[in-house]
Amino acid sequence: MKVIKVKDNVEGGKVAFENFKEALANGAKVIGLATGSTPETFYADITSSDLDLSGLTSINLDEYVGLDGSSDQSYRYFMQEHLFDAKPLKETFVPNGKAADLDAYVKEYDKIIDEHPIDWQVLGLGQNGHIGFNEPGTPIDITTHVVDLTESTIKANSRNFENESDVPRQAISMGIGSIMKSKQLVVMAWGAEKADAVKGMIEGPVIVDLPASILQTRDNVTVIIDEAAASKLTK
Image (cartoon, rainbow, N blue to C red; front, side, top):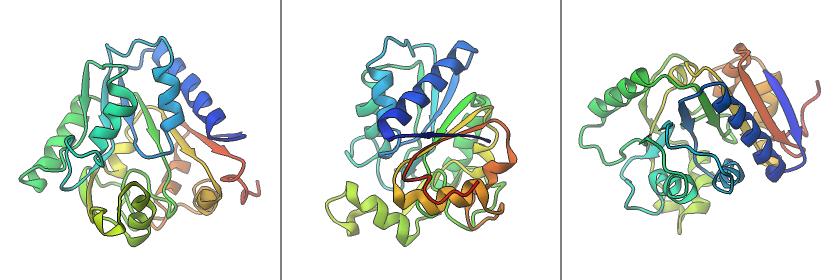
C-alpha cells in the first residue's frame, strides 16, 4: 500500500488523474469507477483534459435499489453528468437499480465483471470504512450483492436528497471479492470525518468490521488522502 498525503481534494484529484494517465499509458482498457463527492475533482480533471476515453470500458461499483438513470439521484445520472457526457467511453456498465429480479441481476453483473477484468479501480471511503456499499461485517470474498444500508451511510448520503427519508435503504454493490480482483486500486478520502476510517484502513487490523482494511493485504493499492483525513495516522 502506497500512501500519498495532499493538501486538499483539488490536489488529490490531480494526483489521481496522473495515476490514471499512467495506467492508460501502460495499457489499461477496463476501469472501475466510483460515485459520490470524493471523486468529483478527479472527474473534473479528466473532462477538462484532452484524454480520449473512447476505447475504454467502465464498470461502476454500485447503484441504489429503485433508481435508474432517469432519476437525478441515481449513480448512472451522476456518471453521465460528471464524466460520460463529456468523455464518451466504448462501453459503460452501471448496476440497474430497477432490475425486476435482483438475485438474478447480481449474477449477471458478476458475469460482466468476469468478462471485463478491471485494470484500474478508483474507490472512495465511507465514514464507517465501507468501500463500494460493502458495509461493516460484509464477507471479504462476496461478489456483487444487494446491501441493506446502515443508518450511518444513509445519514451521510442524505446530503444528496431533499429529505433523509428519501434515501433508498438498499443498494446493489460490487462485492469486496470483486473489487479485490482489480489489477490496480486507487482509494481517495477527504475530510476529518474520514480520519477514523483512514486510520483503520492503513494502521488497524484487517477485520470485517472495517471493510477497507482488507486493502492492506495488497501491494497494488495507492491511497490518496488530504491532511484532515490523515490527521489520526501515527506511522
